[in-house]
Length: 171
Image (cartoon, rainbow, N blue to C red; front, top):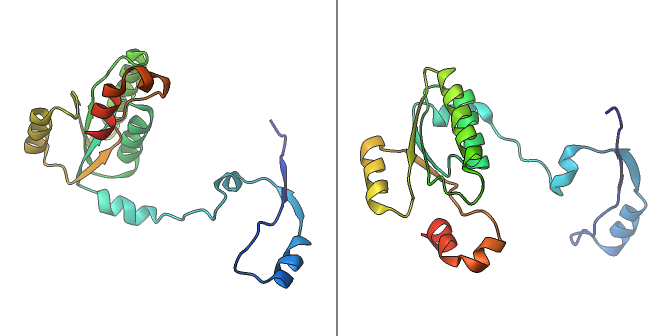
């Protein structure tokens, strides 16, 4: 839509100012266009993307939880932005929610990998709590960086299945 949202800047108490400066600040109410950064409630962080790309170039990154929403998006973003990156993804593909969603994400990662022949993608289906499997992954791929995004989703499920959360989120 072409609808624009306006926001009223209401000054927040600044404990570094004295009472006189605070009173002066309260009169500075402004109505302005809403910016997505307003949702941060802090100043945006500026990332040096060229330095980040250079840092990851030609490195092997192990991404746990690679078939999850965040993991799959990280993998495709890395492949789309970093030349020569090697990514190993691991996911247990549990059925907490429809496994076809994870399979769809893995298919999209495969398609992305096909568009970036300078990058490599390997997927390992397994549990990060399986020490022998993890030892094998490290011995075979020698990751330089590990991004641990594996976690059991859902809150209500944790009440009746706490062991699933201990295994996936703690071990």
